[in-house]
Length: 340
Image 1 (tube, one colour):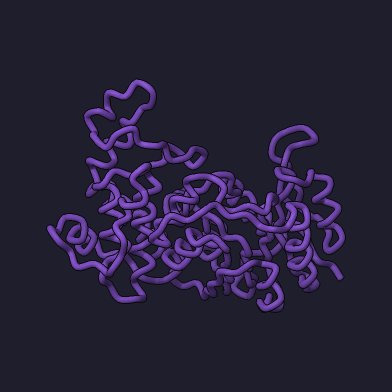
Image 2 (image 1 turned 45 degrees about the vertical axis):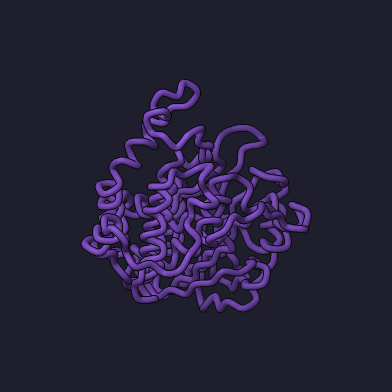
């Protein structure tokens, strides 16, 4: 994969805090040394927690024959449906939706009514005009993902959260001494150029992965892994949350609230974090067939790296191991091989 293609796919992925996206090129390269590229059209890639969707994007671009993409998070499922839905964004339609005086939209509660702590009214209106556009059902995901990417651009970085607005007056925001709102203001006032750039990025990625045969799911991997056919040879991506908690910061909560069209409460699994992680990892690894591989990540949550390694080794042999950082507490990823 060329550097330019990597950049294209990265610009289209869902920006997330704490994702393994930055390690995706190294992971794909390591798998390529285990399984030669000429065999990839016969491989099934199963991603139980797709997150940013960058790994499925890269594997699709590299010619994997079949993808199974899952996540319990609505934001990730929307990203997958848009990026692998084979429907491009129409630049003229986007421009018309954003600039029309009163576009015809599907029925909804104005997002500003429940998101005004974080979004100014004009920013929320752009989201609504795209997310609730009257377009064919097959095209809705890509316009909705464009709307989501528009809003997520108002977070300073994937590692930070939405900031609470002290006022909706841009001139007053510019004079705020406690927070730098300059990036927020520039983006809000340059909505057309920002959206045109996003359209180009998303269409470029969609063009690169349009040939992939893809299945979509939105289910707890503990339930799903017993139903999904791994195929004869698979690369199974197993990376459940280690704290049993999904919508734990405001950017996730706001994104899911916008998708649901109402303010959602925070949610937490009723299982303990260690039990949550172990049950899902073991259920997925238990079904690996000889000759198949799995990608696992651990060491940055409730369980230490050594504890994670002991769980993984019950089911397959680590053939690639990479630690991220130094010391006993450093997390990392590994590729496992099922040998018998």
